[in-house]
Image 1 (tube, rainbow, N blue to C red):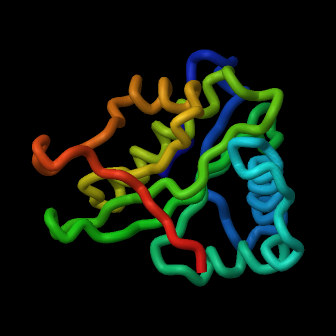
Image 2 (tube, rainbow, N blue to C red):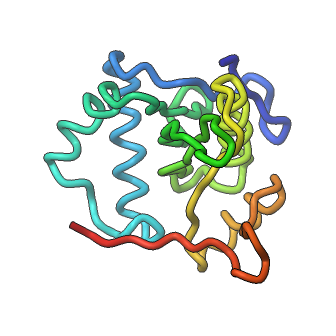
Length: 171
C-alpha cells in the first residue's frame, strides 16, 4: 500500500502506512497509541494491562489477516487503526473489520482520522475485500459524522427486519 496524504495538512506533514510489527519503533507506536485510546473515555478510560502491552504486537503479527495502519504527523505517531481481514459468506470474498481506530489527543480534527479511513479502504481494495465493517459508540458524534461522510452507515438485509446491531458477551 502506498502512503496516503491529506490536503488539510501540509503535504509532507502526514503519512499513513502499514505498521511493521517486527520494527521496534512501529511496535512501540502501536502500543502507545492503543494505550492512549484505551485511557480515553471513548476507549474505556483505563490504561492497557501490562500483559496486553507485552503480548499484543506479537499476537497481531501471528494472527492471519491482522494489519495495523499508522499515521505519522511530522514523523511522530499520531493515529492508528487495527484491522482484521475476515470473510463475507454472502459474497464469498474477504471483508475488513476496523477493530480499533483512534487519533492521538491533541491531533484530532486535523484530517488524520479521514486519512486513516481512506488508507483502510485502499488496503481493503488491495486485499480484494467486498466491504469494511466497524463499530462506533452511539455518543461518538465526531466519529459518526466522519464515517457517514465517507459512506458508512447502518445496514439491513431486509428493512422489515431492522438494522444490524453489534452485541457482545464478555468471557
